Image (cartoon, rainbow, N blue to C red; front, top):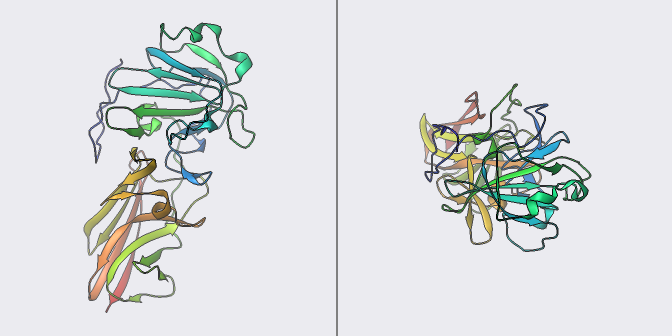
Amino acid sequence: MKKSLILPLLFATVPLAAFDWPQEEIMSDSFYSYFGQLRGGTISTSLIFADPSDVKAADDGKVIAVISEYDDDSCFFPSSFGNAVIVAHNDNLLTVYGNIDGETLSKTIYNTSGTVKTGTVFGSSGNSGWQQGRSSLEFQVVDTKNNTAINPRVLMPRIGEELPLTLTGITLESKTGTRYDLLVQRTIPSGLYRVYRQRQPVAIPYRSRVTINGIIIDTIAYDQLIREGNTVCAAGLRYYSKDVLYPDDRLQLLGEVTLTPGKNTLGMTLADILGKETTSAYSLIIY
């Protein structure tokens, strides 16, 4: 394995190693679909590249499976991957290379007893997966020891600028499901609330954070997603499932807070993977 990356992880400690890009050509650091994004009614545990290219091993490892048809209900290996190659690496990590054109799959990788080196070409990206007609790689990293999916971008070199993040449409939702749009209502009953923003079509934060009067109350990270039974969750104060993270087609959860009577300043922060932050705050009267 290559030199380890030293990266802060808020939750389970995961041994991470630097990966090369799993494409032959690096055309952009922007992607069609991001890890943690709502896609097809589920939280995406993979990264879909924007451009078609040859698909290659991101690190040394051993091919443990070549999938041509797969209909298991596993939330980490759904049939949407189409033709796929799964490689085992050190540190209990697996990489999954999906949406490969079956006609281009290298014949040598069917010998699953063999090892592959970084840069070994598996084939070309195609249309075997469920990507709405896109001919691009779907890439996933799984930590089998901690039962988590790892954000591939944590492990890969980065180029270019990040997509800008926005804090608009801030909405509070009470335990009873009552919603308060903070653009029009700032006097709110006390209680436990979920804080939502208007979801962006593509860009997704690496972390979201909510504060009350400057004190951090909740942080949701997208460096990994955790599997609870057959449900994929993001971790914050607790595990947040898809129905909580994305309650409808418009909103995305920033965190949970308890508002007590009096004047409260609700702060919200979004951070991208490079650490650049977008912030906003609202003064509330709580009764």
